[in-house]
Length: 309
Image (tube, rainbow, N blue to C red; front, side, top):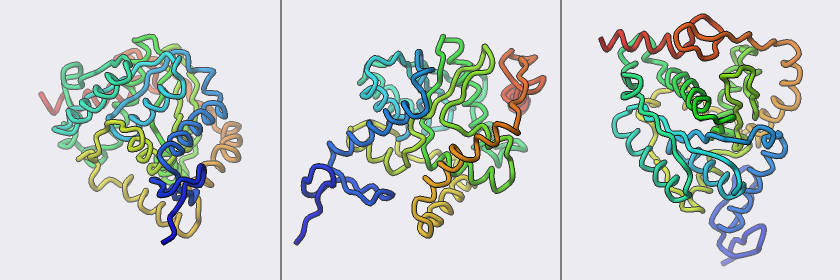
């Protein structure tokens, strides 16, 4: 019986098969491949320029845990701290926090934690009883983006690194292009530079790596992570779109990579010329950057605190 061999070193019985490349790799070669790709992404998109003090957004899932491990291994001198926001999702948040604390402890990385219930007086599941209860992922995203930025600014961190990967990015682009939301599509990029003194830079070092590749990396490096799906994501259109994109990729090989590269290389330069960035002002309630008198976070907070009153 013929045995498969690692496409890099020639060892037999390689552990990981990278679907989009159709290549099999052994454990050591896979770790080397993944970390080299993270380093190349840093170089390609000039992430070095804003990576002086980095806050790594951690959720406990495979992507953000892979991000922290890779940054630690590839850039041992990088000045970084982990940031974890406990969203108060029963069972899920506490298990996620355990994974985050375990990895930060193992690597010796300082961790900043924020408990939404203790500091904000509410938890994400509270929104289920509101009019926007069907858009839980959108609500959660708004809360996390706001808090990650505020925590970074308050702790003197210049940049927030997130674990958004290729699958996440293409799913969002698919939805935005489908609905003609060019003013939002222009914000989807590997590096987003600050345009306000209270706004941290944002980088996505895993943006060219897939869900599959992130999963293989945490497995190969024995990185702890919380494997369960968030219970609030069930029925989300995001999940349905990801499944549809996988079906498209069966008909159009490397569809995700093609769409992302087209967006970055061909479409973004044109959008930058015609879509002007919104003028930022400071929220009348919290003082953080926003495009309106009251920021989205403060509007959400008002709504959920009224429900809890």
